[in-house]
Amino acid sequence: MAFEDLTGRFQMALRRLTGKAKLTENDIDEMMREVRLSLLEADVNYKVVKEFTEDVKVLAYGEKILKGLKPGEQVVKIVNDELTKLMGEETSEINLKTNDMTVMLMVGLQGAGKTTTAGKLANFIKNKHNKKPMLIAADVYRPAAIEQLQTVGQQLGIEVYQEGLIDPETIVKNGLKYAKEQAYDLVIIDTAGRLHIDDSMMDEIQKIEKLSKPDEVLLTVDAMTGQDAVNVAETFNKALNLTGCILTKLDGDTRGGAALSIRKMTGVPIKFSGTGEKLEDIEVFHPERMASRILGMGDILSLVEKATQEIDEEEALSMMEKMMTGKFNYNDLLKQMKMIKRMGKFSGILKMMPGMKSLGNMDKVDDKQLEYIEAIVGSMTEEERKKPELINRSSSRRNRIARGSGRSYSEINKLVDMLEKQQTLMRRMQGMNPDSLQNMAQGNFQPKESRSERRDKMKRKGGFRF
Image 1 (cartoon, rainbow, N blue to C red):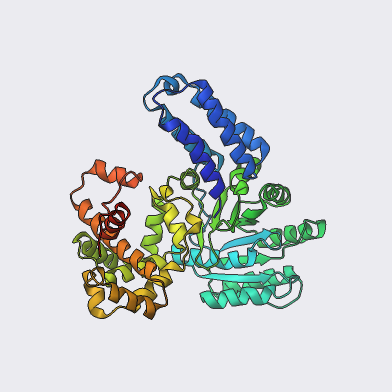
Image 2 (image 1 turned 90 degrees about the vertical axis):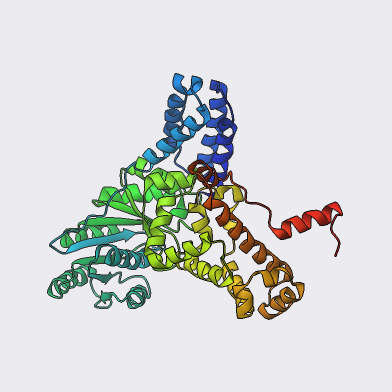
């Protein structure tokens, strides 16, 4: 995932300060050296790094910080605020007309994911803003670009206007006329990308921009290109009236430099980010939430939004009530896993949860574990699913389930422990006060040992006999 290394380095640098009762200027200097190296390694533009570290240092040197209570936590807040400012401070809303057709022009280099992103964006606005979208296939140069857009459109149930390999301006002109006749209120134009920027490419896009008079000119940028993304954005911004950027492949193995550099260097806001391969994997870019993720502080607002979109409220309430009774069984666990599956990548969801940073590298979480859990539960009898204690007490049942699911005996034990921990956690949450819940959110809460853990500990001490 994007920012993984950066998050680790930031946490290490800031952790040295948070435990101290008092800070010296030397403490802050050491922290800022680590932050500077972290940003440079993340491929953030050098000018951006220099200005960011200087701004943080000036604020952190303030007398209130050096002599105040919990100075380390105040420095963390400063870093969080400055990261947010770096990426735009406020969320940049998409420009949609209320009583007329909105036109959006997609531009960018070839390979940035522009065609797929056009479909993702159309689908997002259709569902979120109740619009009737149409896509125009104006990329007549890349092999199979039109077919790719048509495939995306079919999967989403969105019409794609195309006239084959003719002049792109003619396609756009006729497409806009057709969209008005058919009462579409959103048109997204997919234009040709190039492997490099050239004059003919810019001339063509400028003509299409003049012809279509778009409300949004959105540059699709591959987040994995790092600082090169800034150069691309600057070039396009000189030739066109860019209104925003869409960062793709933020779920990939990228250092995240583009997200931290583009707004500062070009003034062009990041409006959306692509977070996966599915056509639903696009989200509004919130600078304050991204800053929180980078610092490993979670993103509970985005998590709630995902849950609201994908999970039925009554279903969620019913599940929560069952969990709070402490009578949570394997049928309930399976329902919970299926809910999580609908929300996207398991590793991505964990990163949004406060306190999960203590679990280490989230990218090592295998999303196939959800499928393995389904297989294990599917190999249980109906009685075993309803009464977990039957499996807890019987090694022969565990062996049978392992054979039936094709998973190892140790995996069955882990699933048993997982259910036990959830039951214990929910029982303890019932009697918690707000302060205790806050500690849990920050990762300071440790549930009681499960039965299996206690048994393993006794075996190590030599106090356990079969």
